[in-house]
Length: 312
Image (cartoon, rainbow, N blue to C red):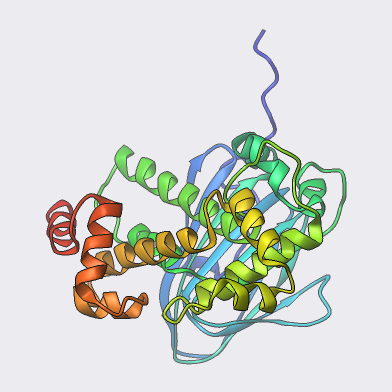
């Protein structure tokens, strides 16, 4: 006899009607689905949605402005362009109240909690206890985190809608992008590195995350280490040590890597030239940006852009 398999989502069962027939759902594998929509609403509409599956939902809204009325939450959730959310709940029900003359473009990755536990593995030691307890069915409650989409998230969503493949390769491509989006959002909220030693105290971890968010938001005019530590309410020593423990690099190493990853994503979108990108991510000299980008990515920006256009 075969060992009992985990109870994953079955295809076409209890799909939440985020936007009714205007959305498309793709079963990527048992336990993971991709729901996406890219459409224009002429008239104001309200869509009811309901999900009774034990799933974690990773939601990314590229465009659109609407309001969610969710059962279990006292206040409505206002959705604006570049909104991202992580939802984990045994039951999710409510309404999307959409405005007239609105372009809506969104992607939602739905993954059964037991599959997410299986995929995340050791990484679960890094997530907040309240999230882990709900994920492991030890608490029956709603867990959620909201944020603004980073450029890597935006690029991954756009690539989903621009998938160059059909047939079996399309599903492989979409599953890869779905997993990429999960990793981006979980790393944003929980950190991206599993540390073998004892984890940081929760308060100190939140201070480190606050410092990281502040550093990233002001990447074009970075603060000194002393200013960053003061803003986060933590000592420079703890800030330096905590950054290495949570993110696996120094404070300004993280900033450099973030800038260069953002630059790569901006090159792929094709909306800016190399000089514009250099200034946008915080380099005062395009030549310095080119040298640093080449060392980090193994190709100068112009050559990287030519190669990317050739592949796409």
